Length: 319
Image 1 (tube, rainbow, N blue to C red):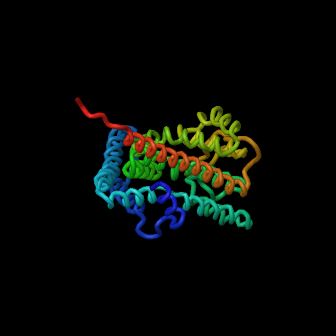
Image 2: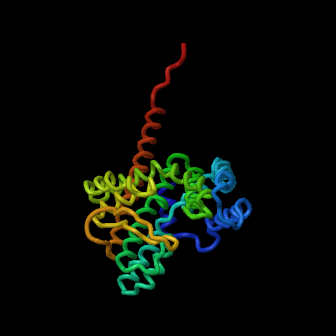
């Protein structure tokens, strides 16, 4: 099922119409308007906003996950639904297309267009970026989404099937919508952000490990150990530090977010990023994905062999 879902994603890409995550986003926005209103949070309302944010997160995530869990138990329909859920949860083709579009614009010397395209991938301000910063932002997004849009969903699919992949993807989507440290979302988005941190804790470190195995092993482990803990996100730090080390390129550094300059540590080692490093990051993610799929296939084959051996054992009659 894993290979089939990944094949559908690469062949079809994201649905151009009726994307389930678009519908989910509209549903989440309706919950936000109902529970949070149009205003911004105030200090004395922090506890109330956290409570309402937690309620909104539960109302957004639990009903579709429970429905998915029930339907996945139905014969035939459950198998098809499981494949479709994983297909919707991963985004390899979309990540490739968005990142390659940025590199293409940079290669053609179209910096304004490259800024616009990378703005579709990142939340930072892109209007004044030079070519180096555009390339770095795109490479960082590729590395981070190698976990968020691929390995994280696969991990929870392996753990809990379709409902696990759906739970991960919905919480990850809410974090992208509400997880900002702005006055409006600082408290309301706390539950979604912490839920995303929790669900990503193990997958992020496994992704960092596979980046190391798929690239420069020693440099990746060194950067992961020294730089990963310095990043403000406990999961993005190890992933991007390991990925930058595996690529032997310098990423990170300060950036503008919502008009304010944010100091960020540098990640990786080596020269500043160039347009070609975007393709290198995509290749690293593909190699890491192959490792995950290879492990999953081997585990499935081993499970089949063990099950066959168990059934072949002679059964002694009772006395």
